[in-house]
Length: 373
Ligand SMILES: NC(=O)c1ccc[n+]([C@@H]2O[C@H](COP(=O)([O-])OP(=O)(O)OC[C@H]3O[C@@H](n4cnc5c(N)ncnc54)[C@H](O)[C@@H]3O)[C@@H](O)[C@H]2O)c1
Image 1 (tube, rainbow, N blue to C red):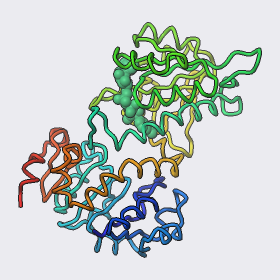
Image 2 (image 1 turned 60 degrees about the vertical axis):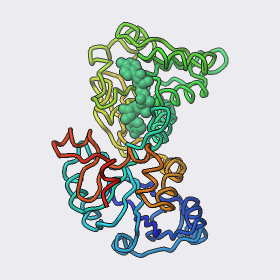
Image 3 (image 1 turned 180 degrees about the vertical axis):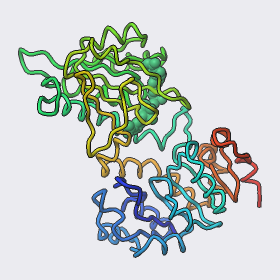
């Protein structure tokens, strides 16, 4: 297969869909990697890195879209890219179609076969191509929160780990899933006194078994949250109710009960945020203040560490990409129902029911799409 990787063109996107190592693996299995010149620069990969891996560097995205059998990307194709998709082409990338009717209609009209990273599943009920970005955002949260806590950045002037004779920062993490667990690990590693709140008892059991000596956990109620935030230097919002907007777990009125200069890091901002006073910010201007409390609410946190994020995403997508290249999408999806769950669009039809429901578009089952000639 000819695997094409264009440069990402969405503003503020520095990641790249194919790392040199992934390209080398694909080439080793008999495929060709066509990479747009400069595609890896934002993630710290030079054209020479790709050439050393055996890739062919291509001048323009147009040439890549015109020749590749499979396009591998990070972000959903932008309008200008969607116009270049071909009927017989496979697209493997994040799509997030439910809130995006324009993109959905364009993909359907293109006739391409589109597999969305975010709906590929695994045996444990997880989303293996979304998890790496949650891991990154979770691990980044205490790092940006500790910066926010510094006096010059508007914070309380508290050091995460304290020093001998001075106690550590108190960190409350609301939501103990992928983001919350990674946030808690890093905050505890920085020496903070960490408590994780979750509403799932099996999850609390897991956290207690695995991290019992590292951080505390507590069942999440409005009362427990109200009590803990009064003492907190930092609160990290990491809740998710699948398919729903994030619940508002700290009200504006509650900010006055917190310590002035405390930091709220709302990782759940991409689902609307879990604090009443959260509004999405960018890496260029990430922090703002409300009633004396500092808010960090960047919606695409992994973009801050584009190199780590690119490699983490590339590791997770590689086995699926190789299966698609080696077997073709039909056989790969027949062999792996989790990959089939990623199928969102095929031959002019939507194949993902939740997107159809959200946008009022008729859906063909992925199994039917597989069987169609
Ligand atoms: N800002 C970013 O750049 C960025 C990056 C990655 C993920 N995210 C977001 O972070 C959020 C968390 O993602 P995740 O992968 O950890 O999800 P997850 O499903 O692994 O974990 C969510 C956890 O929240 C818990 N929860 C639900 N309601 C709760 C409540 N009222 N109180 C306490 N806990 C509650 C669930 O039991 C679950 O354990 C999502 O909104 C996700 O979209 C944001």
